Length: 258
Image (cartoon, rainbow, N blue to C red; front, side):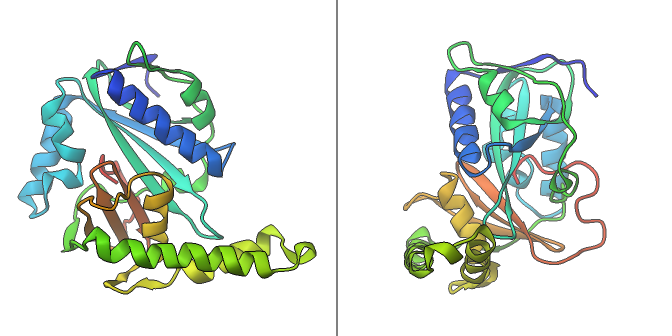
């Protein structure tokens, strides 16, 4: 537990981006919880250096070099997108203007959104809540290996085809049979398919990146693997999906770039 009551972000833009992320997340789950982790600059820089020394880019730990850009460090917000019966973990980071004590707690996403002061660039931390199971099984902090850099223009058409298919097939289900279980099964069928340009990556990761606002038509994309985890990263944030059980997966601190 940390005694830190509030976090000062680097600027108002960081606060606005964080609020937009939470708004999108709450559209999928009004009772969503998020796990917060904040590191001061020295710790974040050391983590990034350790990652780079292991042969992976520093961005695997600190998004867009945020630890070096912001003197206060970095805040990472982890949220789960319930896409079908399975899900994906979305990660959004924000640069901090100052940080006295590291933070690691799970809170209500709705309460956190209420406590984001966009004008002042300040986030007041809500009281912690009992975290859902996924919050204790986040991606590993290190060991990420770059496996692909798929062009967005090759990914987006396949994604939109899946969106159209889900819409058409769900609308074709008689209303009295259109239950959550039926829709989740249909979503799982479509989003579990392998991406054509990178069969290792399920279409679910691309869909999650799109609906949370990370995937843009011209955005550079990278895909990393660590054990049984895959991470699809764009400049605005990352999506992590667990593809298989892996020894030690989810143990210890999690990456600041999901």
